[in-house]
Image 1 (spheres, rainbow, N blue to C red):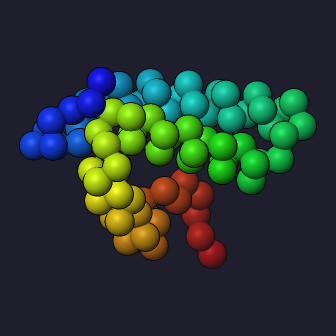
Image 2 (image 1 turned 90 degrees about the horizontal axis):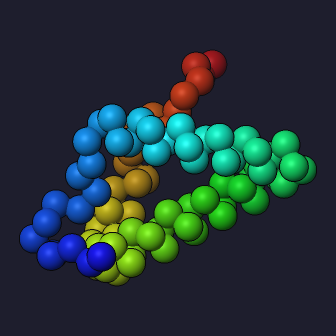
Length: 84
């Protein structure tokens, strides 16, 4: 389903995000247990995620979202372990 461009893309309630992240994390771990390299799993997960976002919100909204990623990455938004 493609959302209206006025819709704030990627707004999902926190509980849904938590549940979805758990499912994706489990699938990622299963792939790694099956011998698939973690980097390969990560790239495939990113591709699948962006494919879904484009299908749902369109290229422009997804590109705008992707433009926010460098700052979020550098700011620790995806860091789950302590950095030394």
